[in-house]
Length: 316
Image (cartoon, rainbow, N blue to C red):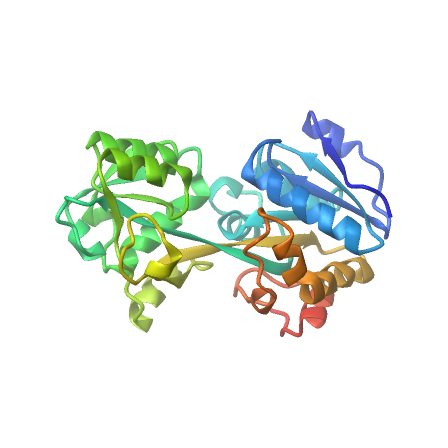
C-alpha cells in the first residue's frame, strides 16, 4: 500500500491529461489546498489508502464546478463534496446550469453540516415567519448552490423570497458581516462556523428554530431537496442556541463516477461501514462520521449499485 500523495492540479488541462483509470487507483478531486473541502478529501483519501488496496491521490481544483465534471467523465474516480453542489450537478441547476452530470453516483453520506438562520439576539425576531418584510442576505454569487437553502429555510416558515427584502451578498460569510453591521436582519450560516463566535462577541446572535412538522419540512424540501432537520440541544454547546431547537442540515457525501469498477467502490463503502467509527475517532476532520448514517438516501442523487449493496440500502 502506498502513502497518500496529495497532488495539486495547477490547471484543468493538467487533469485532462491524466493517465486512464485502473482498478487499483482512486484519484480524488477536491477544492483548493487549505480549504475545508481539501482537508476532508485528503483525510478521507488517507484513510482509504491505509485501509484498502487502492492507491489514492488527491488533486486540488478551484471548486466542484471544476472537479465534479472530471468525476462524471471518469478522469477522476472520487470526490467528497456537500449535497448542495452534488444536487445541482445531477440536476444541471445553479452553477451547473446547462452542465447536467449524469454519471455521478453516491457512495455514502459522511457527516451532516448543520446550518440555520442567524439573527441578532436583540432583534425581537423569534421565528422564521417573523422575517416577513425583513432584510435577508441573499444572492450568494460566490455560493450559488446555497441559494435554494436560503429559499428552503424561508419556506419552512411559510415565506418566499418575495416576502422579504433580499440584500445581495457574495457569500454567507459576507452575510454575517452585514448582520453585524446592521444592514441585514438575517443570514444563512453554518452553526459551527468560525464567524459565529466573532459575531456573537460583537453584537450577540441567535438561531431561529425550524418547524419540524411534516408540512413545513415538505415545503423546505420542495426547494432544497437534500435538506433535512437535525436537533440541537444545550449539550451541543452551539453559540446562539441556548435551548433545544431544530435546524436545517445538509451533508458531506462521497461520490464516484458511474464507470468506476464495482470492486473499488465496494472496497471503499465496506471500509466506511466497518471502520467508519475508527476513522472518525482518529481524525478531527472526519470526526462526525457515523456508520449508521452512511446509507442516507437522497431522492435525486442515485447510489452506485456496488455501494448500495455494501451498505445494505436500496439503490435509488
